Image (cartoon, rainbow, N blue to C red; front, side):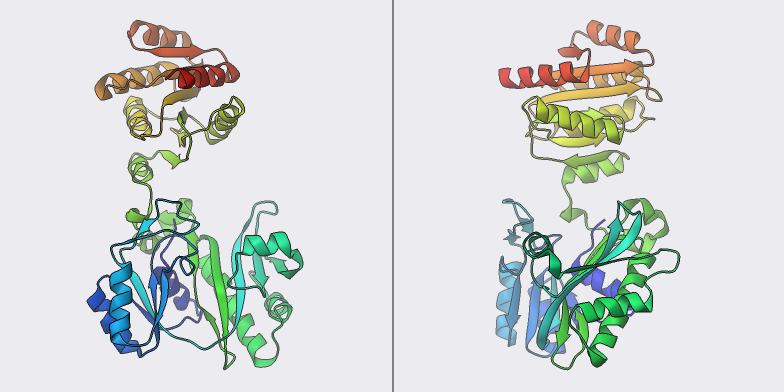
Length: 387
């Protein structure tokens, strides 16, 4: 689950991460009041779950109340398009009004889970304010990494190594080391999958601040982070993904035209790969899970088919815990109740598969069965091209 910048900074501050003073605003009047209270100049920032806001005009420096009102009115209620939002952009519903600060240097710092080592890893760079992926590709020597033992956390010598590696010295290096230590404590305490500070700011007085902050929390840990879970902003998520989460379905919208419904994440990934190999693109990742019942199958199919970009459906099920006849029951009910006319290709193997195939044949509906994953992918592409 992603957080807004103002939410992330409020949580990070509780762990000792220094941030500029700021206040969230939902109206132009609130933005002006916040700016007046902080004292000018201030920065008015659009709050959306996407990076690249500054380059897209979503971050504005203002020096008086009239400019603060103009900036707020220009952002609130309008769509901001950045390189991360896609062409559809995101509607701005809230702002962060933040005090202006004296910028001497912009650095980069983050903690995330390194899947290869199974441990947290710190990433830092003197090239703050830039896309870290671009820095890694063009100048990898500017990227510093430190692997953290989760049993003991970020050690003082590791924090100092990062601070010195960023070219800091003296009192500023000590402040940066404390900043990084606090940042790791927040990463660990919030069950985050990533915390990113870009830029990590050094002021003219040598203070170290989080000028921007991105925090992503592991969804699987939200049961022990109820306060964080309460900060979820469903407006920043795909409506179909929000609906799927209500039914405990794992759904991610993609940009293809073949809707995929599979049980098991690994099988879902393989299904998407073979669809691509056959010459089409998946419209979604949809894992109904091993223990789905007919009602969940119907909900899954309703969500999948309500995506206007879906022009054909591929269902790939291994019937272990989820019996094939239960899948067929849910599918038949869904197609009849929703009046779906999309071509549907089904590949099933496992428990009660013959019963399920007979149910599909006797339903009178337009189902195409396949004998293998490759056969299913080829048939769904053929049906897609015929539409």
